[in-house]
Amino acid sequence: MSPGGLIITAVLLGLFVAAGGAYGILYAAGQLRRSAPLARAAQGCYALQLLITLAVCLGSPLALPWKVFLAASAAAYGFIPPLMWRLLETMHRAGKEMRFP
Amino acid sequence: MYRSQRLALRYFTAAITLFGVMTAAGLLSALYYVEPSLLYNVFDFQMAKILHIDTLVIWLLMGFIGAVYWFLPKELGRETVGIALAEVLFWVFCAAVAVVAAVFILVQYGASNQFSMWFINQGRKYVEAPRWAAVGIVIVVLTFVYNVTMTAWRARKMTGVLWVLIIDLVPLTVLYLDAFPQMTNMSQDLYWWWWLVHMWVEATWEVLIGCLMAWSLMELMGTSRKIVEAWLYIEVMLVLGTGILGLGHHYFWIGTPQYWLGIGGFFSALEPLPLLGMVVHAVYDAGAHHMKTTNRPAFYWVLAEAFGNFIGAGIWGFMMTLPQINLYSHGTQWTVSHGHFAFWGAYGCGVIAMVYLVLQHTRGTTPLDSRAWKWSFALLNLGMLGMVGGLLVAGIAQAFYGRAQGGSTLQAFVVASENHWFQSGMYARLVFGILFSVGYVVLVYDLLAIGRRAAIAAPPQASVA
Image 1 (cartoon, each protein chain N blue to C red):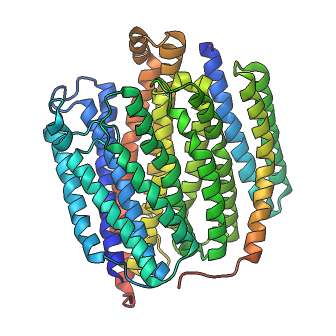
Image 2: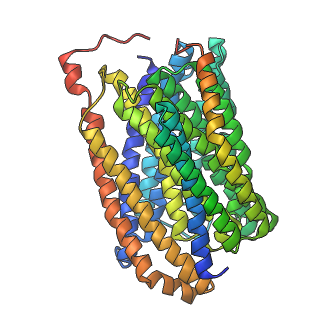
Image 3: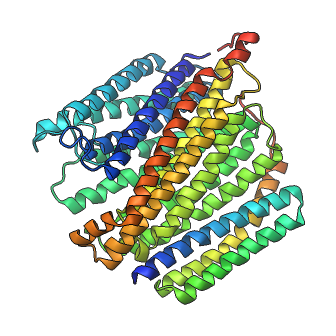
């Protein structure tokens, strides 16, 4: 791997997770406040994550299996916040208060 | 208050003191990078580093033990079994830490023989404590495990959090035994040594802090047991599922089989996924309570734990965990940057949150608030962000100039170390390290002062066992 390729790929990978995290946070905040702008911002972050995935897949010197893995991860990032939100809502609805004795 | 909880307060005091020693030793270590001849042949870099990383392990461990001793009687409604022995061992533990620190500072090193291993330095990074102290740590931890298990047994009660905790304490203890073997083959030695370091930090400690956070959330936000336990099971499954085999991401340059690199890269690249779930959960909880709580310091430190874990372990880790990157970044300041951020986010913030949680009870103050905690929160987190930023720049310079461009030769290492990006990064680390240290001082002031004035104005009712 060339020195430049190393740095660019590493930075893109960091941004990949950062964009996924921002998507998760904004998605959750959007659901909490029932805010359309926040929901759009969340979608924007996820779109950015997909773009980063594309950039890594097309432009980075990573081996093919890692590019496939990254694409699969990007898909998983898309599902995790909505699934997690649904799970949390279900748990909180069903949760009976049972605190410390 | 139970005796177990009084013991917890002692553990927290010791933990915060050692946090200070760790910070001071870290600051000194940072100074060596900008002034390499500092204290040359008097107190060299490696000794400051040993103090820095060993106290890191011990202050967090003491914080965890303290938190368990605090929550256990609340959970089971009875005094901890074997509390008298635990109290004695606390002082033995503190004395042993003090003696080991004095030996590190005054004696520093010895000849390569059995005496040095038993009485000066065992020679394994993170677990350098000489053999006698290592045996002592095993005794303290075994007593702790016995106390926790027997308390649950005698109480004839077992909760989900306790099950997870007790099961987790078994590998946590057994893995420490990895500090003992004397292997002459360096590859074998490092292979097993990583089991200890990795499985503690990225598996058993994660589960332990998960249990402590579960108790903290019930206490802090009144979250129901059913919810925190369900979440704990999911977290444990995901963290262990991705964390255990992530072990392979350490197996670079030490002679382990190549297949480990792919395995390690794959599983550690999955690690941000459960962390993303935790961040969504943190936003949910914060929103569900409209950011309102009677203990804002603890609440904000819990949030810092969730976000810090995601950024430090997730983003910083993913940047360098795939084998083609790790090959170059491994062992540079880049790794140090990730290590600082991840430890701070995953564990440091969590222990501080629990100390504030406990202080609210001991001071009998509702709500618990002050100006100082905001300053310490800002200074510590800003200091940490600056440090990891500086280390990241320095580490990237090392990977670029020393590894990828220079081919990992000694000459390339020197060239990278003289590069202005590397040096600027190390200066930045020092400056932000000072900021972090100021934050620590403010934190100690706040821990001593917070809630006292209100408590004096309205004395709390005597707590009962």
